[in-house]
Image (spheres, rainbow, N blue to C red):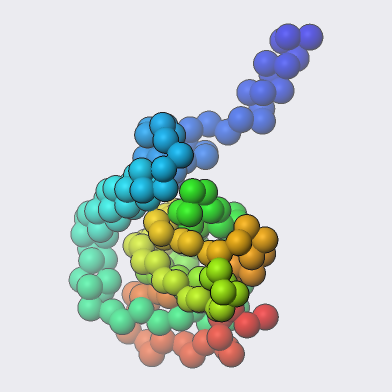
Length: 183
């Protein structure tokens, strides 16, 4: 019985490599020691900044930094938005920290940002942006450390509206199809 339980747990629990990208690994190294939002927000900022630095270093090593530095991020076309959204896990919010881990399956784009909409305590629509650097083939996390979205029931109104990317090709960026988040 115990052996079967151990085998089941081993099968269910992913390996550290399978579950963790840079941000998730960084956060996991710093266990929760407080219920204070500011402690969690500071941890999120430190991990986000550390991982962004590593991502920029990888871009430099790969020779892609120049294209990234020179680009003006554009919204992904609707089809690419849907592909990215469908291929990524759901966003998370813990201690008023929003995080969304995304896999960049585009060989010719660097994902650079997102716009998220939600509602505040007055039930007014609020748009919040996050930036990151997710190179082709990489997995990265968009993080918003101070994501106060009002009442817990309002979280159902939270959605990723737009994903921004830098094209690594010299073509004109594709026009978004009616707004990436409009479905």
